[in-house]
Image (cartoon, rainbow over all chains, first blue to last red; front, side, top):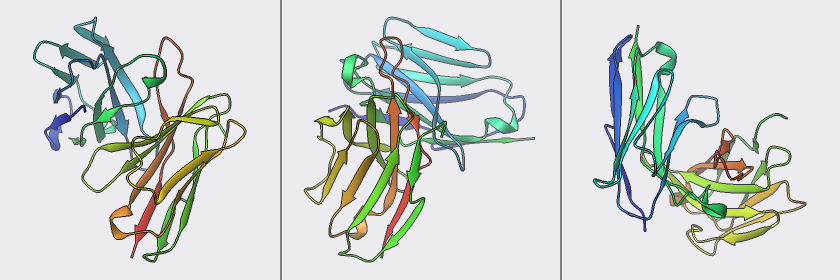
Length: 115
Length: 115
């Protein structure tokens, strides 16, 4: 089955700096890669996702890059703000039909942004 | 409510007891998922419902675990004869599973502690 590895487990940055979280996956059949943000007292929320036919996707301060050959994908947050502090999870899945929500998650990265 | 609702938010039980965890998905979401998050681990898939049927139960760790969904809405995850290794946060998510997005909407989870 699929195995998703995520690094680092913790990341501290100064407000305004960039943060990068990296994930690798093992199953070449995976073609859907979402990132979820988990904040205290809230359900995890999808912040960005990418499919295998795309190499990079941006949404304001957040971007995700995908290298299918190397089987890795990364989350980039620029101009970080204290409210970006949360646990971030990467995931991989087949991304089609009923398997869309059947995801394999990394162990998470606790991001702390210091003001 | 507007989001996925789970109850109880916290449950402490003694080893050997049965527990029931409830999930009320977003109205109209046909797909419902149960995941488990153990300490320091990523989210682990347990079971997926499409309507009232469960086409994928592959993540249930043992026959002590079962789940049902009625009326295409509320779902209950039951753990019989709980063990200490069952201690975790049990997360429910629902989704529209449209062709354009596989976004999962997570509840805040039910934290289970087995003494």
